[in-house]
Length: 162
Image 1 (cartoon, one colour):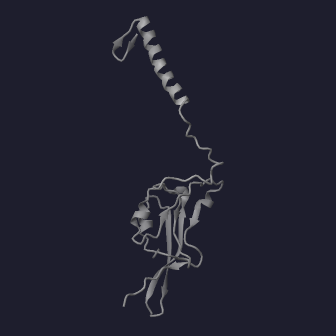
Image 2 (cartoon, one colour; image 1 turned 90 degrees about the horizontal axis):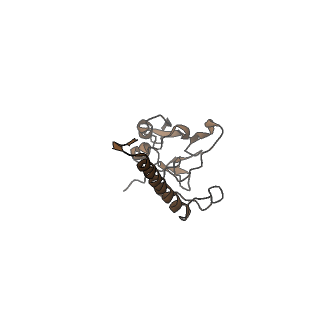
Image 3 (cartoon, rainbow, N blue to C red; image 1 turned 135 degrees about the vertical axis):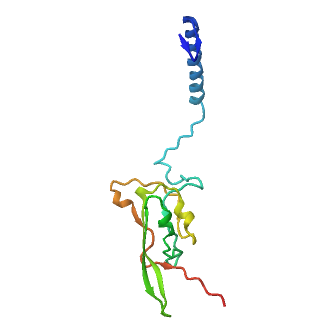
């Protein structure tokens, strides 16, 4: 019998097999008596928290006035490697006659997102971020396409310094 360029006799091979079996059993017994760290997930849903760097769902934070930081520049859409983000913008005319691009719809396909965070890193205004939500199970994939901007939301206007 050969084992990794070593020749064993019948009894030598038997002893080698018994010693490797004992090593495996020692590990198994040690793990069996160790304190259990298994979490009962559906039951402990309320107190379950993820670690700080966890990437759950992409969100666009809005303040209490339904305002966000997104200026519809499209850098996040360009940075996304698999076209998960679709930024739809509109051109409007302001009171002083200037044309301005505003965000009409910000769609995010959670089903095709690879959670690489390139979109968050590309955003110059910190308009999008990942939250701690990890429950994404649905029966219909169309429910994974989310609109991140709220109805009637607008961009936060920066106050001009005098």
